[in-house]
Length: 227
Image (cartoon, rainbow, N blue to C red; front, side):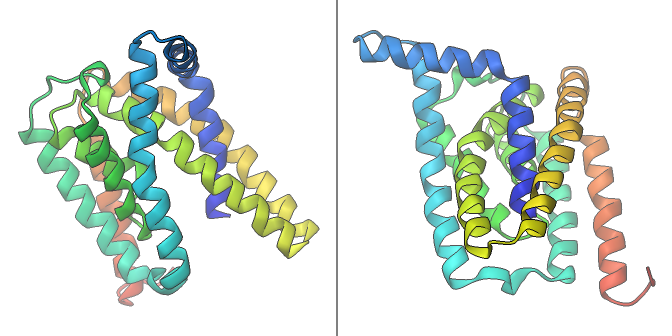
């Protein structure tokens, strides 16, 4: 279900950022004809940034699995990375755009996705945090993060299909499709609202949300409150 929900948001990102995806596709065709193109450069950066995540995800699934899927870990990662995002968002410069990205930046932002293998980290949250640390404008940090999610989650979608075929469970497949559809609709609205907000403001509302959510999770995990 985790992967199914992410696949739904991936389709939402593809719809919202169709212009960027089209520019990358056209850029790759020009590259094949021997022409340099910013769209092709961005496509290659996305590919390079994705490779470390896929390798780490394979190792994580093989050797760690669900061992870290615990409420205490989820609570602390939710709170901890919220604080990190707040610090970097307030202290770091806002001077770079996606068009200014170097391959080094792409690798660092892509490598940050590896931390999201631990539940509660948030793939988009940690990549935006890294992008802010590197000085990207807020909306640009979100744009690069969303574009970077597409090949990573697409690989997860292939993994999901293999899992569903192996399980051969109609109810599990229906649940996955329902979760995918719901996350597509809500994800499309969420991306549009987030991008509009970040063009004129900060990540603070998202930080507050994560702090509240993480605090509730920790309070529940430690038995301070009963849900």
